[in-house]
Length: 116
Picture 1 (cartoon, helix red, strand yellow):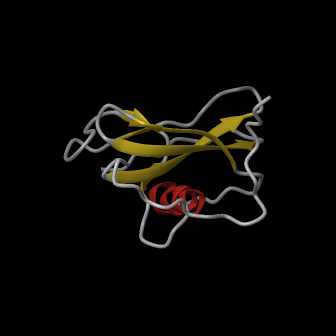
Picture 2 (picture 1 turned 30 degrees about the vertical axis):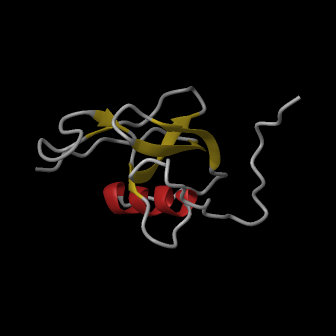
């Protein structure tokens, strides 16, 4: 039987293979205990414009996917997780992005604040 649990003892950046996607990215799904998730709408410029997604972005050199997801979350919504952050998915989409998704739970829902 295959295990879906990740070894969290030492975060490691997997080696890049020539067949890998050209862009590696990670995001953090923030979910309440009632199952409601926070989504952000991407700006109307650049790649994925206007799409809804959870906080995330490109993985920087020397950074693990988990570190990237937490950093991007901090940059995008000025918030850091206080509970466990678990990897729940990794796939290469049809747009050539190798995306790793993490999940964390929060007690209370976010109160949306719009910016320009």
